Image (tube, rainbow, N blue to C red; front, side, top):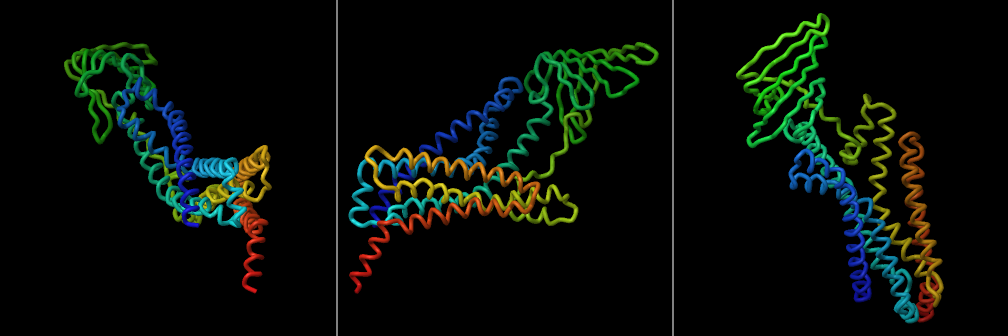
Length: 373
């Protein structure tokens, strides 16, 4: 039987890799469109673009893994039926559970691997992505200031730079400072240099004019300078957000939910996510059983197994939709966590029971008892 298991497992693994890589490539392209503007308009380095989009892949993989496995198993077992290989296996007395053993083994392996991905890989990737996103959005360079465009900062200051040069040098600078509500300050300079210090970003201006207008009296004054420093303070520095749900492991989620200072709303959300992390890997095994159970226990039909395939796909879709629904509702109603477990474990036991009690298996079991007698 080892040869049979290896034969089926090789086909499933090949199909899984093809489907998973194809789906992940398409989703990577769609996700990467979010960062295209940062490359074209803000000068985001390509290596940073690749790193940020790659950090989204662990989460994408955890979502696509059960679906890709379902498609691969469905395709392999349907092909075995089409080529009459499955008919021969059953004719020689091989049980449905034995035929499904390779798929179940791969489902268990993928479930264990997804435990690691969901609880170690995804939180680590999300934390790294958040740090990179923070650096990109708050770096006072081309990432924030656009060449030839007016950029309004968070402290009501508008900056225009005509041209960027090497080593932080800029040319054709206009700074409109509206921090003081009583007066308007406009500074114009031929050149300058961008610097970032612990106190915040600064521009060292050279050869310019500083104009001040009092909004109340309308009084206007002007001065020229050779060197002048415009300090933006914390205009571009925003506080990092607290860790999100995706950035925490199961242990952290339960600990955060148990803290007295955590609101009831957030505690429910943390618990719902923690229980989802526990069960989500099992969907790899559940979807494997959905894919092969119907094809293995159904009667052979020369016209194809279209009805069985449709029923299996519908079952998979319904369970997936119910899982998302119950998880979202459990974030508001804690008692619905029970339904999350029921939605995952019930199909697992039903499919397992159907495979175990399939006719070929019972017939072989009965024959073995007669031989023993």
